[in-house]
Length: 430
Image 1 (cartoon, rainbow, N blue to C red):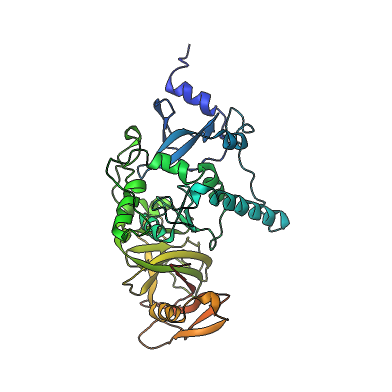
Image 2 (cartoon, rainbow, N blue to C red):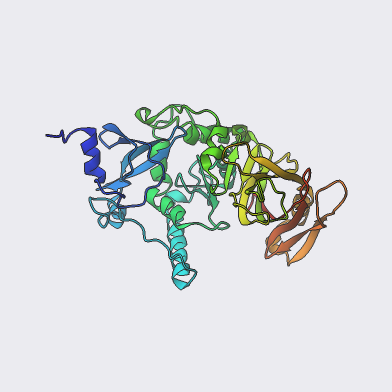
C-alpha cells in the first residue's frame, strides 16, 4: 500500500493528478518545485506539470531562481481576501481567472477596463500607497512578476536586474496584460510580498528611505530580490548560474521569443535621469543572410543595458511594432542598434548596425520642461549628415503631452536595409 504521508502523495493531495492545474500558475516552467507550508515542512517534486497557488486559507508565493528551481512559500490570507479567491477552483484552490476575449470587441474592452479597475483598487490599499522598497509615497510603477508597487527611483534599479528577476511596468503609461494584472492581484500587494522577501532582515540593517542614495537603494534591492538574502534560511537556494548572459542566450529562448531586456548588474549603481521608450516599427529591404531570405531581429544597446525584439521568420521587410524600454543614465552615450539574422545551429549573422544620438531629444525635452503643459509642436531636430545613419531629418515633437521622435535609419556596414523607429522620452518625474 502506498505511503500517503510521502512527499509524492502529499503533493498529489495538494494539486491532484489532472493534466492541468485548476488555476493558472504564476510561472511557466515546472522543472522543480520546493514547497514549504506554514508548519515549515518542505518537499520537492521534479518535472511536475502542476503547481498550486492557494489552498484553504493560505496562498503560495512563487519565487523563480536562475537555476530553474521554483520556491513556493505558503502564507496566511486574511479571511476577507480568502473568501474572494477560494472555493470555485476545486480541491480548495483559487479558481482560474476568466480570460479576456481574444476579439477586439466591447467584451474585450470591458474586460481590460475591469482588470485595470481591480489593479487600481489594489494600488489604493494603504500598504500599497508607499514604495515596497524605500517607502516613498504614491508609487506609480510596479514589478508585475514580483507583485509589488514601487517608486520611479526604485524602478530603475529593478530594471537593471533584468526581466527574469523583475518585470517593471508603469501603472499609467503601460498596457497591462491579463496575466500581469492577475499576478499582482494574486500576490496581494506590498505587505504580502514583503512578508516573504523581508522575513529575515539582519538586526541593524536598515531599508532605504525615499532620499537614500542610488547606491544604497541598489544594494538593498539586489539583496532583497536577486540574491534573496532576506528570505527564510530554509528557502534560500544557491543558484548554479552566475552569468546573466547565459540566461538570455537566444539558443535557449527560441526563435519566437517575446521581446526581452537584459542588464549588466553594475547598471543598478548608475543614477538614471529618465526612461527611453523605443518602438521598433519595421525594417525595409534588409539583407539576405540565409538562402533566399533572413530571420531578422533587432537589438538595442544603451550603456550596460541590452533589449531585443522577437524574431520574424523569413522576411526581408519585417513589421515588429514592438516597444522596448531602457533606463537612461546621467552620463549617456548613443543608442546602438543592431539587426541580426537568427540561426538555429550557428552564430547569428549581423545584418547591419546604426547609432542614434539621443542628445537632441533629451536636450529639447529638458529645455521645454513639462510636455503636458505644451501644445503639439516641434521642439527640436536631429539633422541628417554624412556622419550619421539618418535616412532623413528626424524632428522632435510634442504629441499629446509626450515628447516623441521619429527616426529612419540606413543600416551601416551592410549592402542594404533601413529600420524605422519611434522614440519617446519619459522623465523621472512622470
